[in-house]
Image (cartoon, rainbow, N blue to C red; front, side):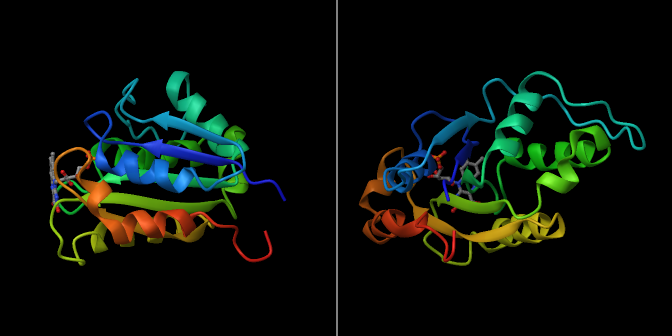
Length: 181
Ligand SMILES: Cc1cc2nc3c(=O)[nH]c(=O)nc-3n(C[C@H](O)[C@H](O)[C@H](O)COP(=O)(O)O)c2cc1C
């Protein structure tokens, strides 16, 4: 079965560590790959209009279409304050609006999409990514998506992550085919 990967990047700087680690993971993929930067263009603020959201427009609609067409969605995120960066969290908030717009079909097609997480952080303490990983995992499982795992690397200045040999090595296998796919 052909997989289609969608990488959602969310760093506040270009060519950052999370992106470099994600590129290393993407290099092992032979299936179609699409990249969307959640910071450019910036996503609009989320407004809670329940009940009665309209269909998403503009960049949000682009993301919805790309997600719908993908089998595997990879969140690529620096750790900011023990959390996902705001643009990634903001996308999750918009998913609430999509759920409230039944014509989006989101509640149905989201099920069984595989969700991956790739992070970069400065602090080598291995527990630092625990909270963002748990938050994302629990949220996507609530939606019926499948948790496909996380890859965490360490680096502070851009490019540092290339020296995290364990993470760079793990990246080569991180997006390997799930059993039976
Ligand atoms: C706003 C902000 C908050 C940060 N918070 C943390 C943190 O809580 N823990 C940590 O280990 N590193 C933290 N960092 C460091 C970044 O995670 C680190 O520099 C990482 O390599 C950035 O990834 P990027 O190059 O992909 O943007 C923070 C950096 C910024 C700018």
